[in-house]
Image (cartoon, rainbow, N blue to C red; front, top):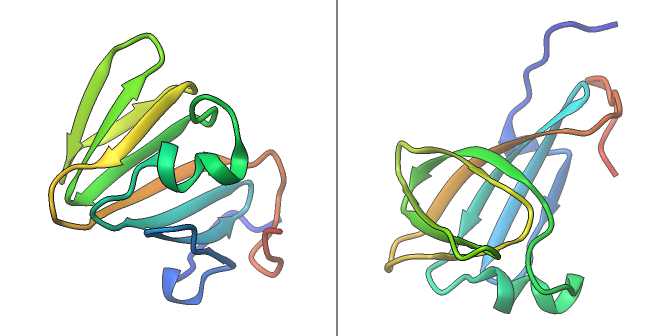
Length: 123
């Protein structure tokens, strides 16, 4: 079993392009790393919710912001503004949006529970 992984986001295993966003995903064993680029005007409840449903985003997110800013508001009313250089965790049950007129570029990490190995792709 491979213990070391390295992949380029320029040759991602999966690319998603929801409205006002681009998500490049690389599978690294049982962890996915994602480079997420969100355009000004992106908001979860406007750009993602129509295709996934629900009242708020039910995924947890762990990552770091490279450029730009994002506001996250949890269902309990708590708010968090993250900006370039900030590491973050957003618990399930939130909305989020890009703040300002600059792209928000983030990297996120998620355990998948599956071992894809460096030779397979996520589906």
